[in-house]
Length: 109
Image 1 (cartoon, rainbow, N blue to C red):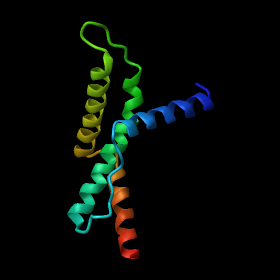
Image 2: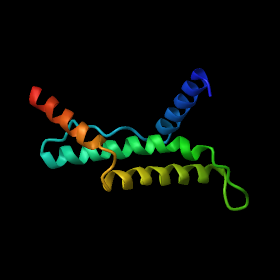
Image 3: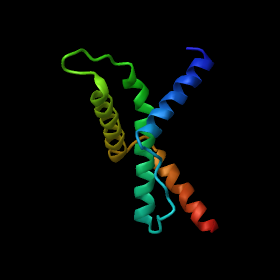
Image 4: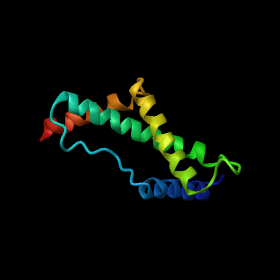
């Protein structure tokens, strides 16, 4: 895949995420350390889910047990849950970095 088609693919995946009503968690209301940690973990789960989406987008399903709009919705929700499970079980360290940055930003206010 060349750079242009790769960029187009990523843009298409972003549009799928936006079309599905997903958005990154907001940290505006996180005041306590527990709330900050929760938002950071939610962000990591969101990020991991978005990174996993392309892995599952090329999987072909065969009738009569798959395919169609319902399959797309179910697969999207399943991948989001994979991201949540990965983040809950320790993730890949994104939540820690996000949490540190959130604390720095809050200290600056």
